[in-house]
Image (cartoon, rainbow, N blue to C red; front, top):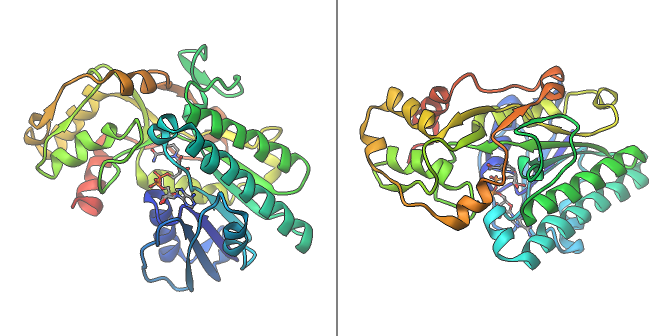
Length: 323
Ligand SMILES: NC(=O)c1ccc[n+]([C@@H]2O[C@H](COP(=O)([O-])OP(=O)(O)OC[C@H]3O[C@@H](n4cnc5c(N)ncnc54)[C@H](O)[C@@H]3O)[C@@H](O)[C@H]2O)c1
């Protein structure tokens, strides 16, 4: 089977592709090739199948046609501009997160009509679709009430994914990712960027600022677990999703203070001492609009996983990702 990963040069796209390089299969089916599509050249790696790296912009239909040239059986749609960037520039967010997603869905739909087989589309949505009057603990099935342009663009993508699946045009699965931490590399434009920086940068010997207080509760998941959940999404039978193809992924809730304590347990006190505490109203306003507590019963029943502890995430970062 062939797989396309949009945003295949990004943090999660690269980790997902490399994991496929290790497993060589999905749900018992051998992978014959992967296309990594991104606006920036995705990095190379070795795999037991050919890897096609395609540079293109998902907001351009012609570029999307080039990404889909190999007629993928599974499309992981991960390309997006992240929350801070979509909030700072409404047009940019609309173009990439909304028009781009529509281009991917329509290309998948056209492929299904041509081949007679609806391709699977696994969409990286976000818990940012929840907020506002949502209950303190988000349960499955509540109305979406995003409090950011990014969350709104993801919510519209979810609805289209659902409708195209209902019509049998695609086999869509939308996963609302918790904040993925600890993200390696450099800080990015996500409002949640500090939720990785205060661990990553300080473990790497630098200082990092925390713009929210220690008691701020984060709904989070590790890179390793989110990749396993993205892969698992391809193995769940379509009919067991029921009437909603979009689900809240499992994660865990810890306060910033608890996460720092876990880092200290694993790595000693030096990293925590490098955190500064200057509040930032802009970031605070976005992230306090997100929910910190979830009861993702449906996803757990479908076999999606949560991390056992943040200590494991710190250990994994030190083992696999530290610069
Ligand atoms: N990382 C998280 O904490 C998190 C949480 C919730 C949801 N998500 C979602 O998961 C997905 C992957 O996130 P990530 O952390 O890997 O982000 P990332 O920024 O590392 O990767 C996204 C990739 O999309 C690419 N891209 C941007 N615009 C593009 C365009 N016009 N055409 C083609 N490619 C384009 C970027 O170059 C980048 O490589 C995103 O859709 C994001 O919204 C991530």
